Image (cartoon, rainbow, N blue to C red; front, side, top):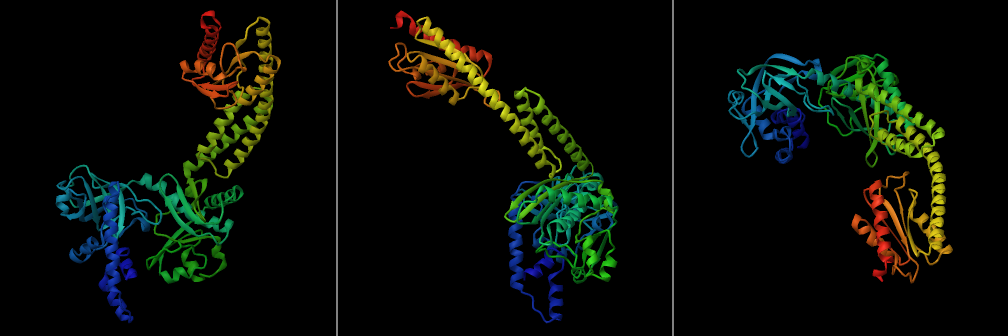
Length: 562
């Protein structure tokens, strides 16, 4: 039943003919299974209508295609695109039209009324023949114009009928029209599809015969290929795969395509087909670099494993050199045991190669500067920017891990230098704090406020506090440090140290919170040591924090506060 429905729904083979052929061979058709499959398709069609997008609302049900064939006697559409590659035809007849009612349900309407604009601008048209490629085999649908005013936005096939979905911008005077495919867009899609075949062939060579296609997408921007493989494809393998496809491009191989009986096509031992896919009979075979007639003369010959040979109904190049260039831009996981490769061709591939060269030159410049330049802050920012640029770039996927490794190595050198610089800063801060403490003790003050070098972290602040407390156990102090120049942290850090039974402050938190509050800072800690931070790290904010802390100290020290 399900197979009979596939013949009917996907290939346009009438159920009554299926019954006749089955009877001649002594086989019965599962009528209940056929009806169940049709009901399921109708349910799927209705569900699809709820999705967004014009194309998704125009889905012909099995009942509607049956009405076209049995009720109206409309023949299935002759598809010209895969055979001739044409993008323009004249004298094409519009045989049927579909529109949406108020409930956004699809229904058949009069062709004359539809073309006159009576049923709105959104329509689905069926022609007797078409140069438009309907979405299938991983290739996106063509776009273009029917007549002078019907803008084709999507093209789909239902039971052999090619439905052209689009918008009517002005009434069409006749049902006899010309069809104009967006040839420039098609010309960008075609090399991506042909190179998908080349990629499939290269994957078999590099990764082995266990690689099976699990899906693909070819549009005017890129190609995407999903395949079975138990692990990530490493950079060396990616480079080999890319080089093999590029060799196919440069080899100037002619592309041959021919309709072949399905049984004969399956006899080709080197044939690549999609796992689980149901193919029509006859089926179209596409080969790169060899003639299909010669292949069929000795279908099991080992020599054919040297060529890409696939079952495919899509549009293709006449010669592989027309792809101009090929670059793999990404390799990722889709699911367990399924990997995905994305790639580009022609101008996009050439640009990806240029981008790779530019990123390589920038990495080399950074490596040199890390060895000779002492400006760690600028180098750290350069390192961060270049790493982000590599991640976001459309560049050879095999190159990116190499560049990241080089940046990691440069980063380690830079980190080592920063560590030395941080130690210098900590020593400077300790020296400043000890000098300020000595001066305060000498002048008979019990507390002081201090502006320390930028970049002190909590560990350094605690160490510094212990040093001061050891030399002057009765002194309290409040210190401010600007953000660490080696990190992304943009907050001003501050900390307060107050010994037990201090005459001015009951604890460190009292001083800290009073200083932070006017600047929307946050912090806290223990009675003898508390730390916090203030956003908006600029010189004025640092000055304001220091001034506030000093004012609090002055107020606490005045006789009137006792």
